[in-house]
Length: 94
Image (cartoon, rainbow, N blue to C red; front, side):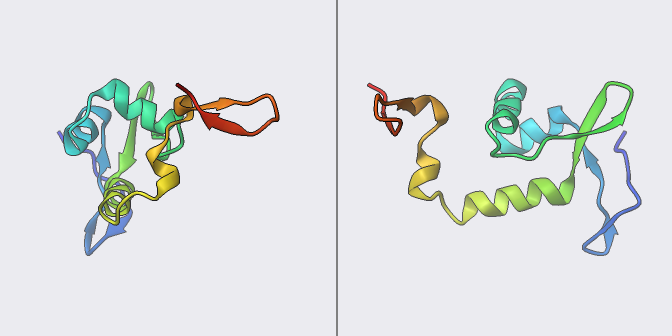
């Protein structure tokens, strides 16, 4: 059953997308979806009720549009790729 919100998106209701569906939409696992949230690449979900969480469809569509524009060189690196150097700057971890 799809949950509907009262927000309007493109002339239709901006429905809530639960984690399982969001992971399918992006073609990733649910743990990787939460990795995207943890690294700040994807906004955190909001609480729908109890322990249920989800994203507005418009939020996920905006993230997909950002991906379609292509990554910037800084986006190619993950936080694990950069190790703190002795001088305080980051360098590629080997």
